[in-house]
Length: 473
Image 1 (cartoon, rainbow, N blue to C red):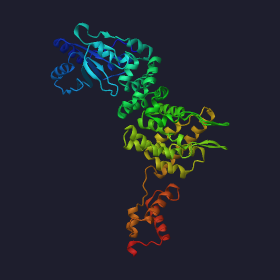
Image 2 (image 1 turned 180 degrees about the horizontal axis):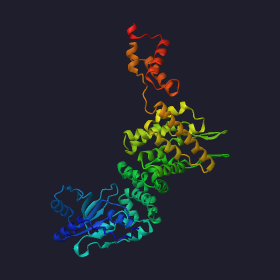
Image 3 (image 1 turned 180 degrees about the vertical axis):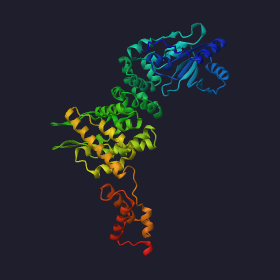
Image 4 (image 1 turned 90 degrees about the horizontal axis):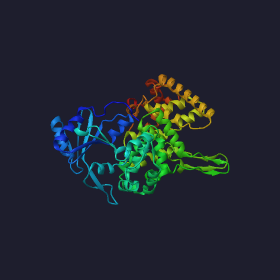
């Protein structure tokens, strides 16, 4: 909790709003995240102002005074402007009522307490008065300040009503718990479990916004664990739910791949804030339930789970409305390659294998190594130390070969166009075979990544196929 004496309303914008509200005879309050984040010592540039009356009218007067652009959303009764690096949104105090099949409320004018009551959680219902006679006074109708101190997520009114009215609030409860390291009050969590099926009326886009914030939080496993225990995970992300559980046959049991995934995700989060690398951690073992098989000799296997998992990535991204662009392709590549450095570290680290890894990973090699190191979650210290030592050897070999051979993202010096022009060929199998053979020769260290050596190999391969140069024909 923030106990400093800094005045959170020292910015001149607040006194401007105060003067305008007093002149118009309405009550105005800063409410929600800006207030909450001040007490948590978190920076915030988003200011929500609730006016008991017309929020749009106060916003219009402020925009005119500041000579700045105002965006008005009459359907929602809100208006927003930007000033001094801050985004200020105005809304009239309101009551809300919901129908069973929609999260869009019927709205009518209300008091400040009505407006606080419709807020999702008590920590987001805190308000500071902006009127001159009570400027800066805290209005805490539902003991939100106490909940901030005790690090608790709780609803201002009956939790069943809160979550049934707007089921997205269940995701937001989990997200705030993950972001802030708070606990969800047991009674509130029980209401999430009771109302979990209501999440089906929420759009996939809104769910994914909250899911991304959970993935991006400091300890994302906290959020996914809450989603699983609440029953929400099975509804919004069944492939991840399927990772949970341990199957045993005789003395053979596999690890719980759900909790393994959470550990890998936290390990990545400790090293990188890259959202898409974190998503790669979420999805790296996603195909294990579909590839699980039992071998009486060796126990449980998950052969080719990296290949099938990479094929599942576009399906999952499409369904979740995640971007079907280079971010998806990056996650797909990470899932496909995530075992490669581990296999390298278990076997003798050959130049050829490292060249191929560099070639396939390209500029994402460091992120791949971060993911692979995070994937070592054994509780046996000696095993972890052995893997990490071998990873260091792989990294040293990569640095040496990269400096010597320039393999990362390389294209064979002799292209298909050169082969076709030299031998007067149309696109055909022979051209592809020669080009592939040159690439493999470079990756295997048979020749250097050099035009003259590649051209000489092309000539030998063409001669083997009875091809003659166009100018000789």
